[in-house]
Image (cartoon, rainbow over all chains, first blue to last red; front, top):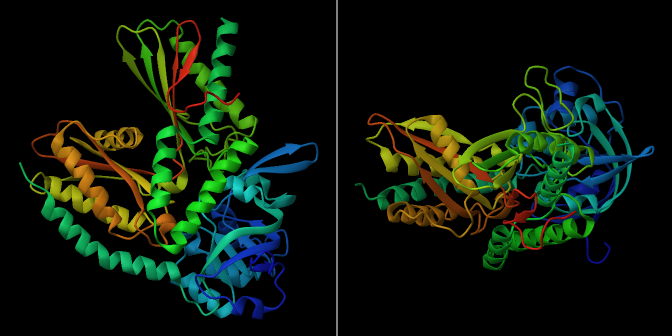
Length: 204
Length: 298
């Protein structure tokens, strides 16, 4: 803990650190985070090309940053999460293949990812969407970039972060899925909302 | 000629930069209202992070969100504005320049090659819609940054007139319940009504860009906007889809006449960081920024 913040360090070496966490907990991350989204997932899973760096124990960030190169080094201007559910097709296999331990994204993920989180002791967290500058302000250093041919948003950016967050845990290592519960609740509410909204419409 | 063009590019470059960095006045006002209205614990906490981000963007002169979207320009060319075609080519140049300078993330992917073009231009992009405005000598440029996550719920449908407005309400509730939560709520919902899918879709974008806090001048529509706003918030989507009473910022509806046999409905959504700008460029190449107080960020 630092200033009352719960900090998790990557690479994660001991699963028990993650196993203590429950959905709804708010954490901050210090260590190495690697970005990968649609194209990188596709390359690893569908094209069966291993990632160019060892991702074991690291955090995976569903994000496409804005980076500017000055001299030999990259500077991150803005970085925030992209909609994670697009990666639902690949994520369980990606977790199994790479050994990543923490996922950062937005909007939550589905039952397949939740099951993989349970099986491999992984957590999924939400960083508030649209907060690109807040994200960039927590990056200490851009360590490098892999697969730049995928373009700036889709490449693998290797980032050193300090107290990156706030991150809300929405899937824990028991496979509890906060988003799934919220979505189920919305589904139930939808029937009533739709009925009431339709009744209000006065026809000409 | 060259000098005029470079002046136009300069103005548009600052305009794009300002739109990416700073939220417009109407969005900021509404954001503060929602922030104080939200009572869920995650909600309050998320609004605080968003507020910190809004302020950091201004301090660091950095785009408020890394997804600076696809650039959509809606241009009203005054009939007597002397630089009509020059302005249109300056828009493209300024887009490329703004990407080079890091104010925009390169987002345009050619769907045929699957490659990112690297400069935010590509087949038919940036998107530029032009209207002619009779009897004036200025040009109005409206820019919307269409992010990926917030464009994802976009839908259009042609329903049978028997279902009409009731069918519209069902379609909107279903669309927002299913696709709203991961689209970076609180969201703005734009609805278009018309004879065909593409007219309804196009009007839904116009609805999205209407000033927040405005209501349709047609009382039936104004009432529907208001009641849909309340009803959609009963879905308890909340900020970032984690539950709460402020998942929907506003509902706007724009409409055109329809065909006796069709009732087309389009839906577009914008995320909480609704980045839009409106600038008026005059014949003497001076300008007026109408969307943001405090002028352009140079």
